[in-house]
View (cartoon, helix red, strand yellow):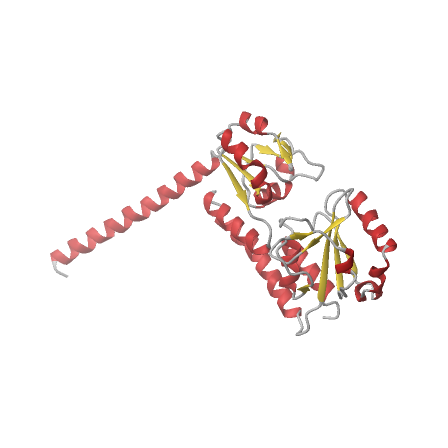
Length: 292
């Protein structure tokens, strides 16, 4: 080999070594920066997601639901539906995360207090996966994020294999303490589970939630009814039972006649997507196609 060629090869080798060293150094700096972040979340679902990704938090919501053990002694910043901006500001957070359903109510207040906030969308399984990937990239937790997403993808494959050509018609109800219930469409998280499981939501709308109409419900005949107990199940479940007992049209539905009314309970099921999405999808699949 000529001397000039050896010099060129040596030079190229040096460039590769420097480039590799630069990448390693950048990764180290990024990981160190991620560990120094002061992150606050305002919902239990988000706390569970961050625990799954092995991310430290300096602030979490005050909630009756059990928080991940690693966050039990972390500062509390108010309830999920009414976070305390004062308490959050005292923690001097580098980033706050809240669910997108609170954006219209609190976005201006966070901006006024100059608190950096990101509203994560958790209204579907797809949005959950996108949020998890984004967080994994930001906090150098790609391995944990990929493992999380793979659990969901595995559940999707399971549900797809169990489907038949005939889609069961599904009605989804969400209990609201003290005021009955709402109808959940395919635009809601539970609605997205039904779609992935191979069911057909009998209510079509661009909105995630609809106000129920007795006249409209009386004309429906779902194969399956899913009742999300949601907040305060000790209140919402008795409400559901009373509703189904008092209004005669429920007893005329095939779902009731065939005993295919299922109550969705926390922590597996919630109004927002959470770490139990894979388990929830598998369960919905079994309810929709019990003979498979």
